[in-house]
Length: 374
Image 1 (cartoon, rainbow, N blue to C red):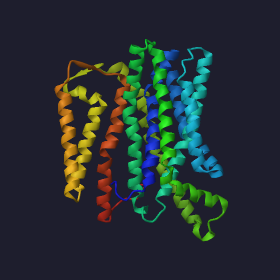
Image 2: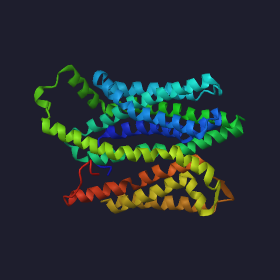
Image 3: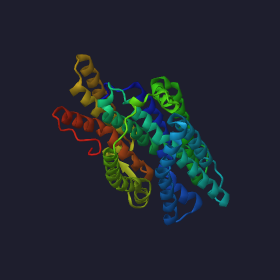
Image 4: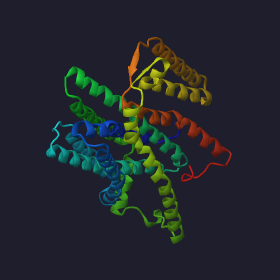
C-alpha cells in the first residue's frame, strides 16, 4: 500500500491533513456556536450551515477556472491565505449584534472561497504526480492514502475543539459562547502548519509545477498533447454525470454529521459513559486500535523478518497501551455532542488498508473494477 508512491504524495497529504483538521474542528461545533452565540433557532442555524457547505462544494468551479488562468500551484497558496483570514475573523469574539453576524457571514464566504481554490487544485497536483509511468499503476491507492490523510485530521478535530473550549472555560473563565472562538482559532493554527509543510517539502513535487509552467508557456510540443475524440469526450462526460449522481447523495447524507446528527447527539443521547464503552470516546484509544489494524497488515505482508518484527512490536505496544488505559479508568466520562464526529473518519483510516488490499487482490486476478466503479 505504501510502496512505490511518489514522495510528493506525503507532502501534499500532510498539507491537506492540516487544512482538513482545521476545517473539521470548525465544522464540529459550528452549528452549536450559531445557536449558543446568536440564539438562532434550529431552522435558521441549519440554513446557514447548509448554505456554507453549498458554497464549499460550488466554489471549486471558480478554483478550477482560476487555476486554468493563473496555475493550480498559485491557487493552492492563495486559497490557504484566504481561508486563514476567514478563520481569523471567525475566531474574534465580536459579540452577538448585527455587525457580528455580518462578520460571521464574511468569514464563511472567505473560508468557502479559500477551500474552493485550495482543495480541488491540491488534488490536481496529487493526480499529476502519477502521470509518470513508474507511478501510474498506483494512482488509485495513492488517492486512497491521500483521502486517509484527510480523515486523520478529521478524526482529531472534535477532540481538539472540545479540549480547547473546556480549557478556555476553566482556565481563562470565558463564557461558553465565547469559548467557541478558541476552537475556530485552532483552524488558523492548522493552516500555518499546512503552508509550512507545503513550502518546506516543495522539492518533492516541484516537477509538477514545472510541467505546468512549461505547458502554459507553450514549451510542450504538440505531440505530447492528446486530443480527445468527440466519442471519448461524450464518454467521459457521461461517466462524470454518473459519478455526480452518486456523490451528491453521499455528501448530502454525510454532512448531516455536523447538523442533524450533532443535534440528535446533543438532545437525545446519554451525556456520560463508563467502563469499556467510555474508551471509545478517547481518540488516543481509537488511534491504538488503528495501529493494531495496520500492524496486522504489516505482519501479514512484510517480506522480511525485520519488517514482521516491527509490525509485531507495534501490535504489542498498541494492545499494552489499551490494556493500561482500561485498567486506569475511573468514574464516568462526559460525552459531548461533537465527539461523535470522530468515529466516521476513524473507520475510514482503519479500513483504508482493507480496501487497498481488496483491490490489489482483484488486480492480481484480473478483476479490479475501474475507478468510477470503485
